Image 1 (cartoon, helix red, strand yellow):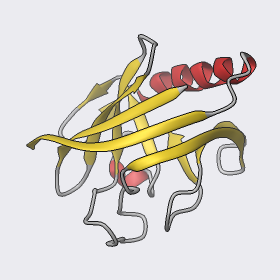
Image 2: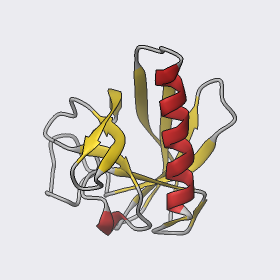
Image 3: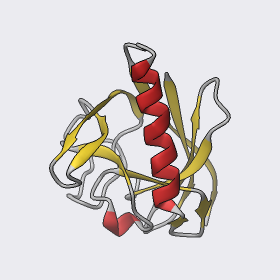
Length: 142
């Protein structure tokens, strides 16, 4: 399964994008911390670097449940697809939502539940690897 996150809208407070799953009709918006220049990181305020990463489902102590975990992100640990409305709530993770504003996504829990269901179904079908491909495709500054 290939998950694509295309970062499109960049503000001084957040990075907003669109998440799609290849060969699936599901799509939603994403919100992350600020995307910074390569090598620049402010703890809890910087988006992960663009790139391709393995996604697994494993136990999250913070959420007390099985959650999508984005693996092997250089300089980051514990990165997950998460439930949040604002970048200030994600600490490097990627939150999903069904709608978006200038610095927010809406209906996050519903979008997250669908994403998790899609990932679980892929694992149940025996798909060995889920990958997220993150790209910066700036549409406009907002």
